[in-house]
Structures are given as C-alpha cells and as structure tokens.
View 1 (tube, rainbow, N blue to C red):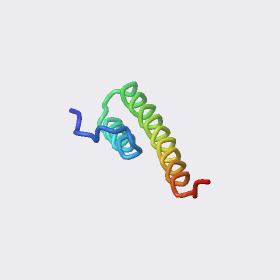
View 2 (view 1 turned 90 degrees about the vertical axis):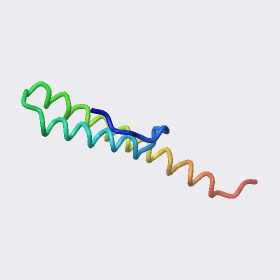
View 3 (view 1 turned 180 degrees about the vertical axis):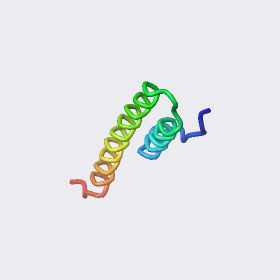
Length: 67
C-alpha cells in the first residue's frame, strides 16, 4: 500500500504523500473516503509548501556573507 519515501521529511516527501492521497481519492468508491483523501492531499500540499519555504530560507541564509 505505501511506497518507499526519503527518510527526511522534505517537500518532495510531502508532495509524494499528496500524490498518494490524490490517487486514493480518485480510486475511492465511498464519498467519505474520497473526502478524507482530498483533505489529506490538501494538508500534505500545505506541508510541502511550508517545507519548501523553510528550505529556501535556509539556502538564502547560507548564501549570505557572515560578519
């Protein structure tokens, strides 16, 4: 059922889980299961966005000169 994911919880990890949730929603026959999967997809995508912002901020700080 579950696929292999990177150990670190990166934006790629969260996006992969979002895709799994979207697939679950597409394959669901029960409306409540479909709705749950769509809510999960939304949450995973929000976490991916936040993880990407944090990674971008870290990269920006790392490239700034130190005093």
